[in-house]
Length: 472
Length: 99
Image 1: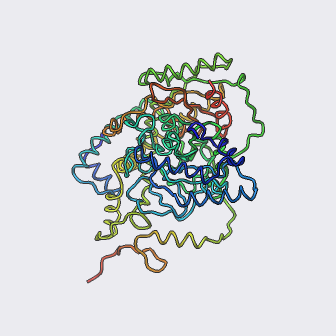
Image 2: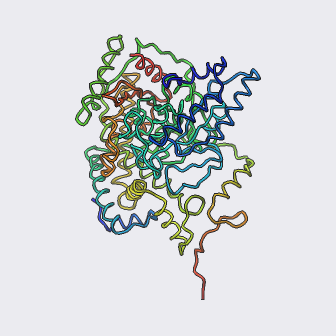
Image 3: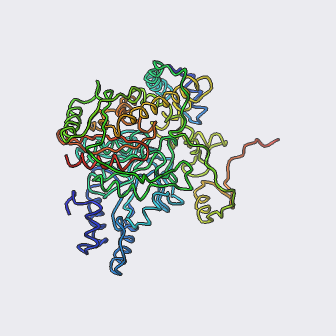
C-alpha cells in the first residue's frame, strides 16, 4: 500500500474484504518502522509483541465472521506521556526512564476496546515542554519532510510517525499548540479538542487548566473517527464534559468565517502568509462569507500570559517527582530533602528546570500579583476576545505557525525564540476552545498548516470546514 | 529582572540543586523571558476578574459511596516506589536521632 492509502477507512475495508490480514498490515508497519525509525526517531518504545498479538486476535475475529469496529486492526501510536498499562511511560524524561505504567489512560481504554493495534510510544519534548522535540532526554525526532529540520513539538514523534507512514493515527497532547504546531510542521492533521472534551485521566500532567489529548492523522476524517471514540465525560476526570449538539447542521454557504488581522503582521514568514491567504481567497471564491475580525489579546499578549500560567501550573504538577513514589531516586542522599533535590537534579532536563524555576518564581511571595494574577486577568481578556468574535463569526482561520519547520539546533540555545514559534496557538488553550490544523500546501518541501478555531464543543464544524479545505 | 540571589532562592523553593554555572545561565535566560512578559503591563487589568479555568464550572461532586479499590493497580503502584517495606513506601528519616 502507498502511504497516502494508509487511512482508517481504506485499511478497514481491506480487512473486511479480506484483501489482507491485520497481521500483514501490522507486519508491514513494523517493517517500515524498523527501516525508518533510526533515521527520524519517532518511537521511543516499540511494542512489537503486543502489536502482533492484537493483530492475531483481530484476524481470529474476522475468520469467525464477527463484525469489526472501524478502528479494529488499525495500527496507531501514542505520545509517551499517556499511560498504557504495563508499558514504559517516560514523558521523554530521565526521571521516568524506567517507569512502567500501572494502568491505562481513559483514552487508551477506549481505543483498546475498539481493538486498534498499539505499535508503540512516540518521542516528545521532556514532559511535553517544547516546540521542536529537541528537548527529549532520548534525542531529537527529525522531520520526515526534511531530516535536517525539527518536526515541531511537543508531539513531534506522533506527528512525524503519521507523516512518515509509521502509524495510521497517533495520540498527542496539546497544552499550548503541541498537537497543532507539529501537525503543521509535518503536513498532517492535528486536532486540539475543547478543554474537557477528552478525559485527561492517565495523561502526565503539565498545565492542568490547558492540557488536552487529541488525535493526529493523515486526513480530517481519520481525526474525526478517533476523536469520536475518545471524547466524552469520564468519572475519573472531573473536568471532562461533553454534550452532543442535536441541532448540528453545516452549510458552507452560510458559514461565517473570521480572519483576525492580528495574525497577519510582522514576524510571519511571507510565504506562509501568502499560502494561507490564497486558501482563504479560494474559500471566498466558493461563496463563503469571510470577515476581518480582531483578537487583540490573542497573539503576543496570549503568549506572554501562557508563559506565566503554564510554568506556574507545571511547577506545581511536577512537584510530584521527588524520588519517593516512583521514577529516578538518588538513594545515596543523606537526608530526605537531599533525596528530593538530587533526584530532581539528575532527573530533570534543562527546559523542564527552566520552566519549574519560572513558575516557582511567578507564584512566589512578592511576585504573585505582578505575574500570576496579572496573567490570569489577561486570560479573561483572551476568553472575552473569542466570545465577542464568536458572536459575529462561526469559525476563525489563522496560520498555525508563523515559521516553517526550523533547522535542528537553530533555536535550542535561545528559549525565547523557541517560545515565539507558538505565538498563534497558545490563545486557543487559554480560552479552552477547539482548533484543528490542516495542511494547506508547501513552501518547497516544507509543509504549511492552516488553523481552524471553533466555538466550544463544536469540533464537528471545524472538522467539516477542514474537509472543505482539504479538497481545495 | 531577576537577580542571582533570587534565582538561588527560587531553586531552593523548587527543590532544584543548581550549580553556579546554572545560576548564571538561569539568571540570564529567565530575565529575557520576564522581559518579554513585561508586555502584559501595557494592558489595563484593574477592572478584570482573573480566570483560573477555561469554563465557568463549579465543584464536581459524586455520591459519597465507598468504591472498591483495584488491588492490582495498588500493587503495581507500590512496586514503582524506589524503596518500600511491606505495603509502605520508605523514606529517609525526617528527625535526627537524639544522642
